[in-house]
Image (cartoon, rainbow, N blue to C red; front, top):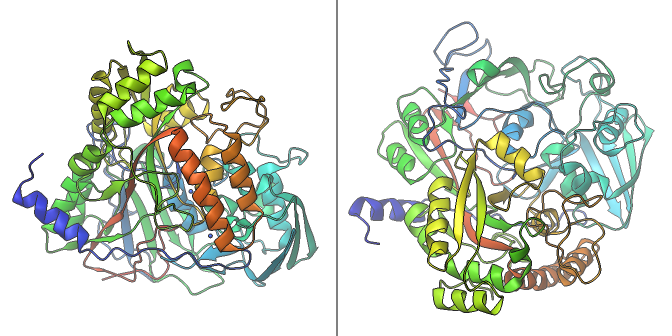
Length: 576
């Protein structure tokens, strides 16, 4: 497809924008979202549900950026509202954007880096299956209680311990793969020392402690009459001031008793603008200070202004289409999956729809992570080969399936409806009929987590900068698999509902499990190289893209770091 001079300029701008590969550095034993940023609807109004959100005024109606006493206001524009404020009740990075301001974990990531740093723990060690952490003293929760080791024990038990009186039955899928599968016991040696015994040596464990669902919640809140869907009781630099679901607006204010350096900002407002271009226009007109979820069109708006700029770094994410083998018998044949992978023109999707903000994918592990197999290449678009594979598999006359997608574009898929339409057109050429099932994001998450989809567009942002966060979390069933079968039924006990393909390849599973228990990063990289090759050849997904992290930032903002892991990091941000 020919591109205009404006489109070439956009590409040249993005290529020169200073992308920064995140270097994974080993700390201790060593590395989401659907995690990641929810971004905006393409055509259903100004908010995720089609309503006009308004929402750029302060709690008292002041529309300026003077904020609360002691600091300015930062207005953060995004494409969808948080469905909950409970970090243990979500797989959505849209929720994490807010909860990361109010909650802290034992360990954290350096802003914009993959290195671990102190948070509520000041020191830690991991030897084999034994982990010891020394906790920070003098830390106060937003409810005024003092932070001790007992708070982490209660947080852990609420997430994964069914014998705990306050166990959260509706906890997200993060519970097992973050902590539950790996921890045998957690004990408070005293108020400021934790002793954790793992079920096995597990290389990414310390990094899992830095993930957003591993933050520490007040024990008093857990065991008291607190609705954590609507309240946040953490130790973070900001506390909840107002949750306005009716207007898709969340107001946070600086926490006066924060143990660390007080934030420069007095107030943070999370505001929803469903359409990318609407959000970009709000930024350049001074109605917002930071926005995310940009696509090429909205990037043009920001790039053409004098009041804001585009900032990018290399992302650690993947966009893909998963075949649900538990729902569609044809998908259980590798040749069918390969045929569809050859028929879908992912190069055209990346170049013509994502227009310079992404590259073609070829495996589950993004290029910025160790373990990415450089010898693999994207499936070549070859419809003759695709037709031949279908005939070999007994589907030469084609078949039909439903493709479920979210309506809200996301960083790894800035145009989900157009992507789905391209896939439908491509597959029609080899006799496969695709029905597009597009859903609001919260409904999409529920529908797919229950395994009701036949195929789905999906994606993932790293939570901990370790290949395990892709290979194990997204493609390992984490349950018993019938002998000789490379897929599992969705209702299998213990099944990992983040494995949208219901794939269960024994060779792949063995390689990933070996990598988890290997301490040496070079040896782990080799195991992940092999696992990636298996995943490429077996094609449980159509690998679509790896996307950049793109933000729009007002010229009045200083101290903001674009990050591929965690965040947004707002403590050191100032607004003129």
